[in-house]
Image 1 (cartoon, rainbow, N blue to C red):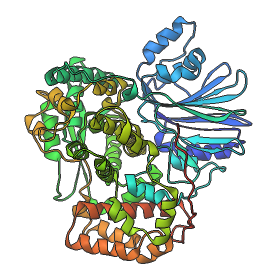
Image 2: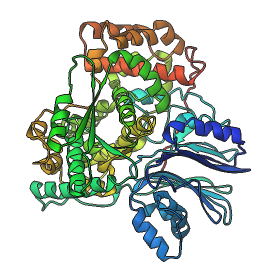
Image 3: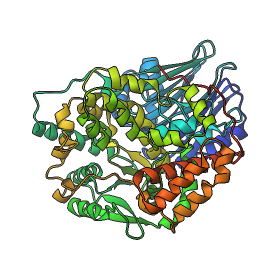
Image 4: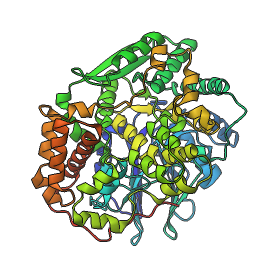
Length: 620
């Protein structure tokens, strides 16, 4: 696991490259390496997980140079295949096979990879060309700045590092606030910075002096034409899923560094925990699996520590209960915003950041989690409501409103007239592909929702958050549910094996968990793993004081986009009638202002609104 960065057709000096590397030191503290030529550079910060004594990057093979971030789980198979073709490898590190793989398969090399990764290749064998690739789920993002007119290209694994290049300016996309409030973080290839984008999942990118930047999207695992198996019973689907997850969890436990598991107390992480603990016992390993749960000092709603402890006892793990004092949250928010690089409206960001810091403090560099199961196996209430809604297209608006940090009606009431006019001139804040999929793509309503969740929401909102906030503490997160085999299997489930209103969600996954985790956990009401912000954002709490300060009328008037009187009304409502809708709206606005303060020296001064605001082109 690493952090990578680089340039094409750019003259960078060593000081600049060192500055960019230092901005991602937390994600790769074990070693740094760079290949630097007059008009290109590839750099790497390493977090050593596999073969710590080998794996020095950049990798070189003839006139091909490669840097890599992630884990390649089928590297042994690929190494054997490539050795049979005459290639020799000096170590057993997973990334060392990449130059030979690229030389053998060219731009299609990523089609042979099973894992989570972002890769950059500099090929000087003929005409200089840079090739980049992202994994099928978008677990390891690459942010980039492409100056088409000058042909200059910069990329990095994290936004703050990308902004460390002299040729990349930190300029706010003035319409980004609307995109953020519409979907909790910008979807598609968009970011909150003007001129800065992110490559989509399953992308292969080719860059040359002659043709410029070309992006090709490979089919994601759920888009590979698999059909639901209507002859398979729910019990059979559960048995097959359990066997598949057992195999993948066992593979993901292989590392040359200590591995732990995150146990929230819900179904998804509990199942991963149970399977990991069993795999370690069956493999004859010494010692038990270590598990981590986070809770908050005091008494708060939705506390899951008792469920997590019960799972840990049943699985026989060594359990660590992490407890965070809410009084520290105002200080944590600045750290979280800086590591994310752009606002993410879910309060879970503070929990995620604090949890992985505790994992690393306990001596672990790798953690397994249950993330992404809800997207694959239909676990969200918004999915149930959409499926249960009447026929017609009105369900689409309801579903999209559930994705928002601030519902559409409230969002529009917050905007000043000038800002409302500006964002209306831009058009929809969401990528156009989302409504197209929901309205007219083949498949059932639930299948279309799943396609949107996996292509747009999961990478942007969920996986980037987990990646950035775990690597902030030098922890590699491994996600069994995003393994291509698991994603493909989920595509073969019928709607009834996923979700039936009134009977439950994630039905195949619950079936797979039977007998593995305590019945009290299986039968408990579903609740999100998040921060109880509605209870914490009340008068007398530190978060309330911070929010009132950050969202002062003076600050909002200077920004020019949000009506101060409407925000004051939200504070009054939250003080007297606390609700999830209002608390999340205030949290989201506060997070946005903290992000502006962190990244822009001009925060607090009027923002210039362009009409129409520039629209970022969505990758084909």
